Length: 620
Image 1 (spheres, rainbow, N blue to C red):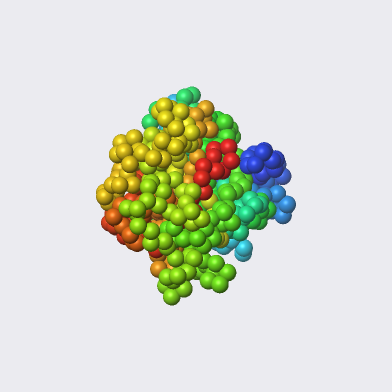
Image 2: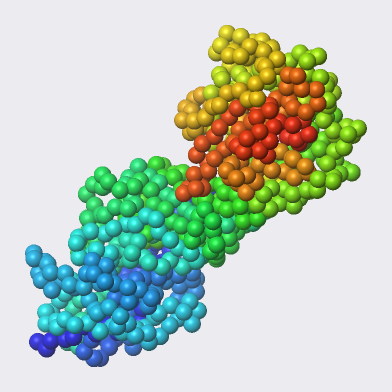
């Protein structure tokens, strides 16, 4: 038999074909690979050629064969050749052809030994790729050639494509990075794995690559509702999928037939991150917009992830959204009991993102302590001038002395625990003592719940047990709790600058059966000199977001400047951009940089009106 030098010439265009079916709010669309391999006329010449997959063979031109190549793969999501079906069309990436420096990094391997004693040799030579044709729409490489150095003389050779494919392992990487919607590069690096038999047809070695990894294309979009417009102004920064199984930063066993998973790995990560930006903490390249419906989301392209095939249980999908106007983040979570990913198939996951909008309930309720009218009114309307520091207004437009919107200068020494005058907006707010019970005995918690407010995205909630629950559990009454705290007696006569310093645990730790006992409040910041601060991380040096509500209790020995408020700051984890801690206290004259506005609880600060215990687990 004549020795043949391995020269790969190709027309590379592959696809994973999708059928569509809806499943509740999200849909998972399973690929249906077309295995009709007949009717292709062989190309004449002494070459080693192969298809990137069986669909590519079916779609290839009659005069050329589609070949695998020494390169990383790039996938484009969109319409297939019939202009009806949609899927991932694979192309070859010239950039990476010059980047391989060791045998383990090469993607294409030929078994020069036997099945019993394999000798996997990478092929062909690095840096020899010549582009022959490109796709006019995507500019992806569709035809190219490479030069190899080995001589081949067997009837058949085993082919493997993938990262570390010569070691009987396929490594699924986390994190993966895809910066362009509908385009997935570095698929080999992230875990794409394929095999083939290359057979001598007398003129060249022909083969068809069969892909064995699984793929998910994520399509989040803004669902119908009050939050939709605000969410459509946001960007997708990241997708994380989590399950009971170790799935990321881990190797899976493979062989010539595909994945050989008899049991899940005991090491690695139980999640895979797909980053859709260059820097999640300070994004500069952000191309994933949030569309307003499923069809537009699909047409935009989606975010593509590589995974090992198999059944995953207790699956959680988290989408990190970013509002670029105010530099805020929020995490939207979807769950499903299980998800089965078939070898060589692409799954579509459509996720409708919905959250509650609280603008109508709170935006016009900010007020100075003890005032009878709100901070803003019809004659002095609130600003809608948001940036990374907050909602910026004019200091010349704030309430003035003598106005019903101006704070009350009642002498706290002359009053009891309720110092706010009857008829004022704080008269029915909790006393500082009742706030103390919420903090000390109300099992405070925090969570990452997203919400929209005045056209922008925010997140976070603080949870407490309801006052009646606290009273029942501690053998007292709500009236007694309002008159005196359990630890400090009557705080209304205390001269402390702050009390308590609590770091609440996560709301996720509360059992489902216990959640009906709780209510929550929102981190809505406050107005200082006409500008709303504390809702964006750019409003303070620590990048906290703040919860603050007036009590009905003024600060002891203070005749006109300070009153008690419940206050908390919530803090981000800057690798996940989710809230991961909170600090809660009662504030009066404490004015350090971790307090709202880095200042005391001055009565001229405009805080939202205390809502009562209206926001519950059953009715947020």
